[in-house]
Figure 1 (cartoon, rainbow, N blue to C red):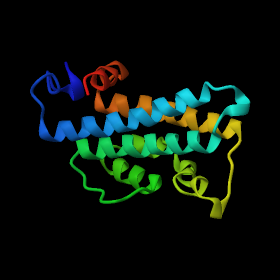
Figure 2 (spheres, rainbow, N blue to C red):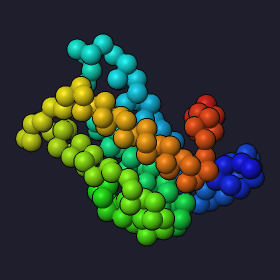
Figure 3 (cartoon, helix red, strand yellow):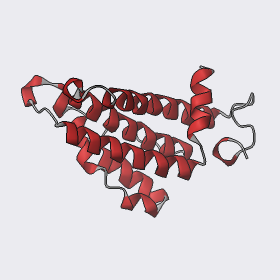
Length: 155
């Protein structure tokens, strides 16, 4: 079977909805890769707020990929708790995801008005959550990380 359980869906014969799912996953994966790379820096150079932001963005976009796959409209929504609840209406397994704490990294860590600098440990925890969500959602969508890497090469 190919991507998303549909043979050859992305190998020359693109499905309109599937193409949109692919695009969400590509954008999400770039956030994941950015967080992974930044965590590989020497500890005193790790940009913790940037890593936490990319982890939050990865989870948000991965949830949206799942919703698009199931043709659920979510508007301009960015709250992970609400997105997760929309996903849980389709698949109750989403209730098990503990991602709500990532919400603060969407906005709060990006602006000086609400100054907050996550610790290195917090950024590692955010990355671990992103890894868990990646496994979970990729499994739900029937996509493998290797497929996404191939898509990135063929942009």
